[in-house]
Length: 147
Image (cartoon, rainbow, N blue to C red; front, side, top):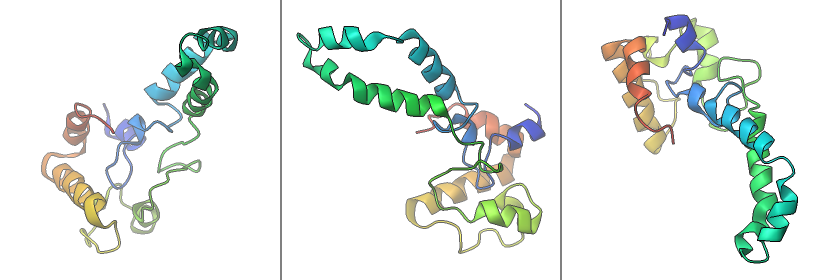
C-alpha cells in the first residue's frame, strides 16, 4: 500500500483508524451493513424464537448495536468527520507542525500525549514506525488484532 493511502488509515498517533469499528470505510461497517440487510424482517422470527430461547428477547438490543456498527460515522483522525472518543493531542499537533506522525516531530516524545498504558502503546507504535518506516509498520500491525 502506498504512503498516501496509509495516511488515510493511520492516525497521527499511529493508531489504525482503518480497522476501527467507527471508521466509515471499515470492514466492520461493511459486514454490519450486509448483516443488517440479511436480517431484514428478522424481528418477527426473533420474537418466535424467544419463546424457547430467552436470549432472543434481547434481539432489539443486538439490532441497535448492529445499526451503530453499520453507521460508521467517523472519517478517521485526519478528516473533518473525526469522532474518535480517545483524547489525543496529535490530531491538532499534526497541522501545527506540518508532520504526518508523532515520531517525525522534533519534540517526540512530548509530555502532552497520553498517560499510562495508552502512552506506552503510543511510544511503541511511533518508535516502531521510526525504526522500520511507516509502510512496514502498517503491514506488521495488520497482523495483530485491533482490539
